[in-house]
Image 1 (cartoon, rainbow, N blue to C red):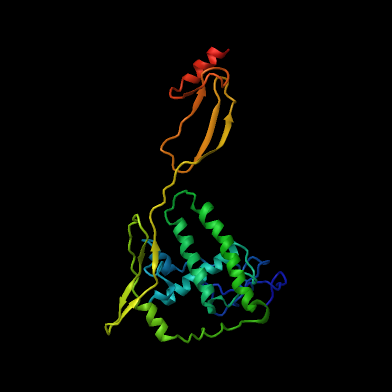
Image 2: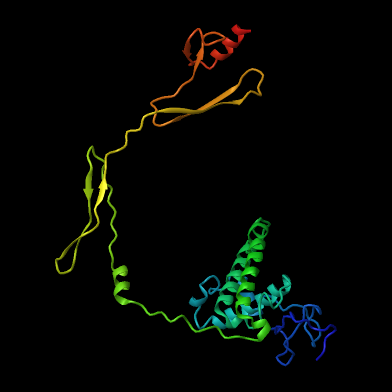
Length: 288
């Protein structure tokens, strides 16, 4: 078998689903058509049976967690996912450092691709123009391909050939400690602050009647905070021709806060509480 171009080290080979079973299982990124078999381009996204089922909406397995798809529907789900992956690889020009030909033998990669298939379907299911593809799908394509590349990198299947996933982690549970967490009781109580310090502690009664006391917590009276400082007094803006903006911050719990101004052009005439927003304008008129 030969193609019009020499395959590179990152060529991605797939089996076109709608081709004869005896046809070679390959295409190359450079060739752009299935190798060795009368170019039909990319295989359809879905096979005819699944496509017909999608006519009235997605198949009943689509959108379920992958592990929840029944044995009856799993072959159709695998077929749809593989054809979606074939489309995804060609559409976004991926190579074997981003997804390997043995992707279906790695559960984390399958989970990522299945989630991507469901997301891409959801984006376009309404069949109307929208922002979802630009703001949701394509940013996630970039993030998804980066995650896929990390999954491939930790295995190196594209360099050394397929590597089986390691065995499941061998957890050795401490059943006593596990049961303490599983059967534990968490309670929350809101306690009042009083004028005196008061100690609180939780009590548990064991199944045999043993009383167990917990750590004591000291709850003191509420703090009495008084206003003690004015800070941050500043000219905020004087850009307007007829007014200026002043600002200050009162530190502490003040009963109120207000501004004063002098009654004349200097401080010698004393201070007057500012209450009327127009007073400043009148004073400015008098001081001119």
